[in-house]
Image (tube, rainbow, N blue to C red; front, side, top):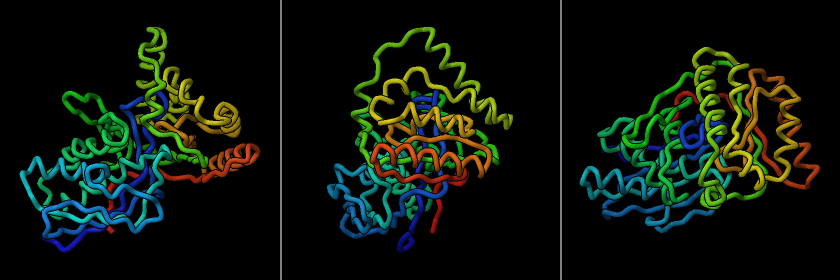
Amino acid sequence: MKESVKVFSPATVANVGSGFDILGFALSNRGDIIEVLPNNEKSLRIINESDTDLPLNPAKNVASVAVAALLGELGSEQGFDLVFHQKISPGSGIGSSAASSAGSVFGVNELLGRPFTLKQLVSFAMQGEKIASGVAHADNVAPALLGGFTLIRSYLPLDIVQLPSPEKLLCTISHPDIIVRTEDSRKILLKEILLKDAVIQWGNVAGLVSGLYTNDYELIGRSLQDVIIEPVRALLIPGFDTIKKAVLKAGALGCSISGSGPSIFALSNSEEVAARIEQVMQQIFKSMDIEVDTFTSHINRQGQKIL
C-alpha cells in the first residue's frame, strides 16, 4: 500500500434548477484538499489543518462515515487518517459535505488498489450526505466523483448517467455570508405538488438534458426554471429575486439556487457576460450590507484529481 495520497475534491452545484436531487455538475476552482494516510490503529481519524471548523468525531464527520461504509463493504479493518488541508465552508450550497465524502472514499480506494469503480464509490459517499442532511442524495457526490454533469436516473437501484458539458459553458457563483443548513432547507419543502407544476418541471428537466447534448445554450437557459423548489427556498436568501432578475438582464442564460443555498449560480457562455454577472451579484449584496464571495468557474470534467 502507498504511504499516502492527496486529492482535490471539487465543489459542486446540485439541483441545477429543475433537477432537484437528480442533476449536478462539478466546479473547477473550489474544493477540498484531503490527504489520506493508512494507520496501524484500525481506526478512522479526522485531522483538521484547514481554516474551517470540522467535527473530529468519526461518527459525526461525513468523510469518515463514508469511508466506514466502504471498509464495511470490503470487510476491512484497515485504519486511515483523513487530513483536511483545505475545506469548503459548510452550509455554503456548493457541496461541502459531498466534497469531503467523495474525496475521502476516492483516496482510500486509491490506497487499497481501486477495488471499486468511481460509480460504485457514489453509494459510499452518499452515506456521508445522509449524516449531513438526513437524506442520502447523490446529486453532489456523483459529479464530485465523476466530473462534469451527472443525472441520477434512479436511486433504487442507483443508476447514474454522465451527461456532456458544453465547452463554452461557464458558471458564476455568489456565496453570501449567511448559512443555510441543508437539513433546515429540506424541512420547509412542500410535501405535495400540483400536477401542472410537475408537468412544467418534467419538461424543463428534459429540455436541460437535451440542451447539454446538443450544445444549445438558449435551450439550456430556457430550461433552467424551477417552479417547485426554488420559490420556497428563495425565501431563505435575501435579495434572491432581485439578483435573478438583474443577472438575466446582464445576459445570463439562467439563474437559480445552488443546492440548498445560500449560494446562487448563473450560467453563461461568455467570459464578458460572466464578468458582468459577478459585478451585478456583488453590487446587490453590497447594497444589503452582506459580505459575498463571487467567482466564475469552468465545468470540471475530471472530478477527483490526485495532487
